[in-house]
Length: 99
Image (cartoon, rainbow, N blue to C red; front, side, top):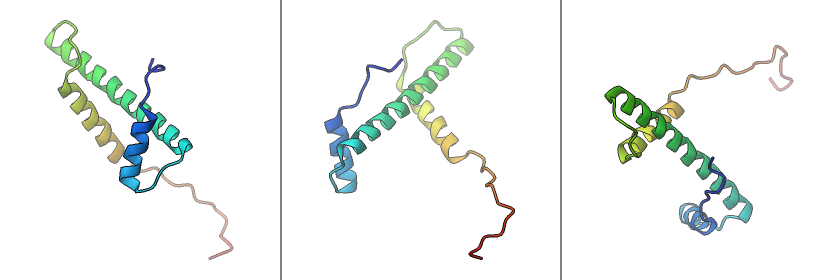
């Protein structure tokens, strides 16, 4: 669905340079561009779900995405990220040699 969209490698490189103070390698820039693309895709999908629910509740025809949909999508994704339940960690029944 988002195959043809991409972030400019130069823009990603400049942003990373301004944040870290070092020049990132081309592989790191490519990886960060991919991560950013996935993140934006998740926000857009969530915003579209919010828009559909809103239109369904209010019995309105389809409307374009609005900034409020994007803000709410970002808020929900951010809330999910920081408020997910903790997973139980696997503990070995064997004693460690280093205890």
